[in-house]
Length: 614
Image 1: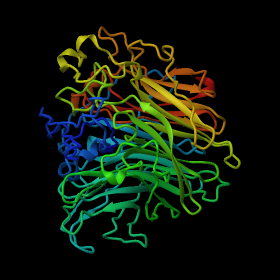
Image 2: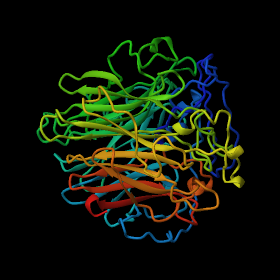
Image 3: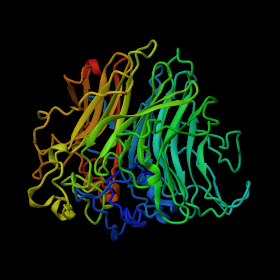
Image 4: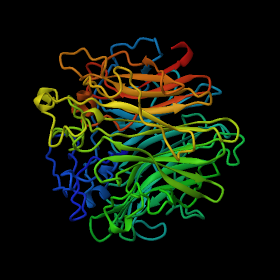
């Protein structure tokens, strides 16, 4: 999902499939963040009595006109400009694992949803995140170091054009939001690439953009296709763009939750090629009816200046036995109700794309994976990676009225999502021995126990009623046959035996692997909480393994986070993902969102350490 300015969003919403509308009205956040009401649709009841699932927009994307028109959880854009002093007194972080705040903090506005990349030759680290500090339009921030905290750089916005014809626009303005930050470093060209979504608030324009930098400080500006059309119909450093049709008010397409990968294998025939995937939401242009949201992919061979026409990468298996539920008859047998794609490139140039899909039975999600072969752009799959993911509406409590009506954890009010990360261990030769990993988190030991349960008010610490408690865990699976088959899920967090209950939550993991077979998973972790309210405060852990059986765990956050104080002090959003990267030298770069004691906004933190010395 996107801020978010996009950060992706997951499939935890109820929907009225009888009318095929998505009345997923999220909390309306005014510029002063006054409390507002939430409106839900009446869900169609499946035989299980549970609502079926359709992908949600990423958080920031809910500020778009498309979200409002299509009843996709509209959330009024944040354009306030609160200038509050902050001396940055965060309580001090020990240097044990080199953990520190990434962003400087000029005002009490949040940063969240980080992504990280590094130039392994120089050690220069570039971190991206949703940064609300600019006010409006909301932008993605970039922070470069070490040292950290670093100055904030905002890649320049593209001017958006909607309605009209040619270069004549009915609506012409910067985007109201950009986000869903994703970053990669290109070894071939010694460049950094940053992608985000962008959209307007008063028209239906939306796009996916690429920004390029040689140093992590100076970034190129994307140009929309209406001002600089290319041979493939895109613009300059514009991956895709929808202009809202001749009126600018056609919201039948919305581009959301992108991610980026680059081919960094010198022996690959496509060395240096950039790949971007995203969710392309389709709606009935005559009514606010959800149609589909396939994952699409485009590539660039000229440093991101121009991109190919996008292709659907949701797979060619038809009918796919893993996608038997569908919201529209045209989707029968096709895995096209998706969100949150993550691409990775194998040694031989094969592109692997993992994504979340809600069509297994319309109740719980599944993770699917497809293979894209760049020579001819053939697609294989979608292959089932794992089902079920225990992330349905009855597996988690629902946010309080101060939230967005999404799933959350007990003793919390931030929206909860089972977003996944994908990693590839490259074998360094032909790709024959490449190994794939997917990590995610869910509440399987408490599955089905939260139907109709809403967390209490903030005065109760957002406690679940009747002594109920979530017990979210982090899991990982692997594939040694290029994604065709996968191992059974193995628990990553080592605070208890797999399958047992200790009422402690771990959440928002990301996974990375290097050529040496070292696998790292970063996740938020509540095992360290010693407050009177158990399972309340969070720190962050990095797990390290080579065999998925024996784990070494490293605590990388030296202070407790109370996420109730995140996001302007209302705790409704902390970003939808964290990020981690491990290099071949064994150096780990982990980034996550945290709230230092005494603060009412979130910041991005980083830990840099070597596995052998941790």
